[in-house]
Image (tube, rainbow, N blue to C red; front, side, top):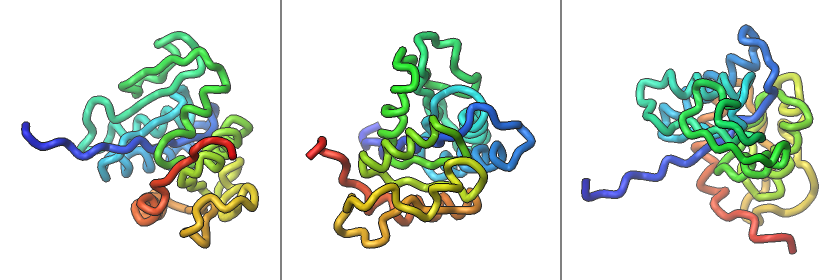
Length: 190
């Protein structure tokens, strides 16, 4: 093949490792993972259960799924810690500090979540990433449609915030509209 394939940007889906398979949280993570891969993105998670598993399973259910579309950034040292739907398993041995690696995705989408999700969203905010949060129980619902602080992350984006959404389709439409505006990133602590 003589042409370079378009880069399939990784989008992180973060949320609780302990959500039930019959919950709206799990369903939203699944639908979001599927729509992301349908639209040419890769899905990156913390690689474990709950929201992370749902997002990876959703990605694999896409009719255009390809091996390598699911990436798991694991907190521990073992490859076996990853859920079965992760294609690329990256054990870090960093424990909760691996959240900083997850926050480096091109966009971070929060689906519910507790303290770990809060840390990933705060890091993504500091790294000037596009952050989208579902308006559901957990930290995503608390942070949706807000700003973590008053810093000017992108001077050209007057309504910069953690953008709240209610459905996977709305999430994808917002990502596609806003992602080009969030191409500049953190350049170190000033």
